Length: 219
Image (cartoon, rainbow, N blue to C red; front, side, top):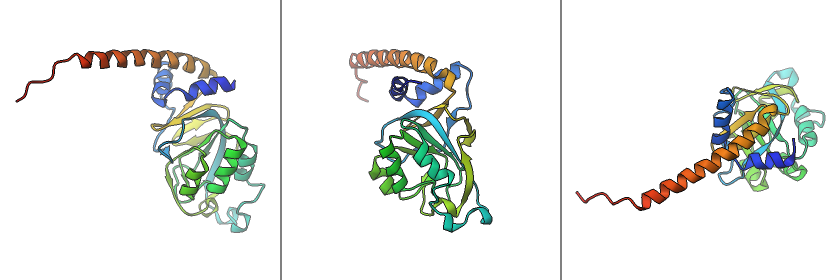
């Protein structure tokens, strides 16, 4: 998909995209329970690059391997393409952070569009200061290896109860995150722009009519 198409997607709202997907028969596409880490961060839009965090198991979570360059987390940070959205599955486990401020800064420098997870991030103030857009369930202090085993990358995952396939389109804003099957992206963007143009006209008409309404009489 072209960068222009994702730039156009970023100009839409998740509410509009949800409506358009509903018209195509898709209901299970909204990643609930997540919000932007920073209220003024931009809309995130791009193709999904997926990472799975499996439940903790002692023999798979050696603290000595924290930050190991061969881990799926570190490979994701270094190999997710510019413009992609990293989507991380934790099954809603927020007891440890999937990444912190240093990794957020690295992803921003590499040109990754943002991160969406049903889990938590750590070093929240630093992540916000990095300017890297994150939509997540919460913030926490412990590192990922305190709660998660390496579950692999670039495979189908379940984030917030939604199936996400590598290459799916993702958009995330103040209302949460939506997953768009890749083959529907162009139609969703085209029709979404028409929907928002019509809604802007309706809103303008509503405001115009409101100005001409008489005030309610004093009681």
